[in-house]
Image 1 (spheres, helix red, strand yellow):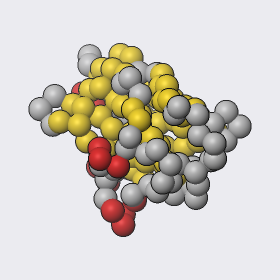
Image 2: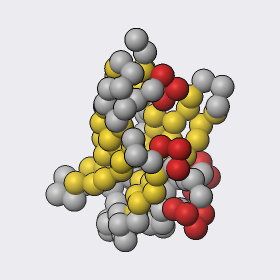
Image 3: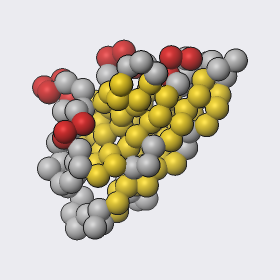
Image 4: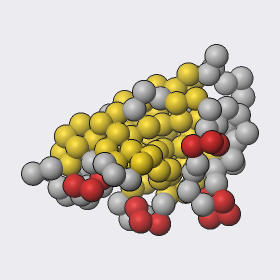
Length: 131
């Protein structure tokens, strides 16, 4: 019943910006969390950000703070990942996922989002940063 649709991504030069979008539909209540993950060459798939729709808690990995920002448009029920000053090492497949309804964003109390915390996944989108 719950589906995740994501959009955005593309190819950009170093220093450029991209904005990824994610919508989760099918929830009967606004009580869930959205997580962002990326799969980069040689590094596996890592959680990089999350946001709780229920309480507004947000988290971005320490290594990405200052460049990546997670936010939500409440009217359109869309979560955004704004990525600025992109670097070649940011290249990879970016996935949006939702937790199925528990509504918690890990934050500092639990570290980066983990794959096992998320049940429904978007299709992924390619981000390529190169000259």
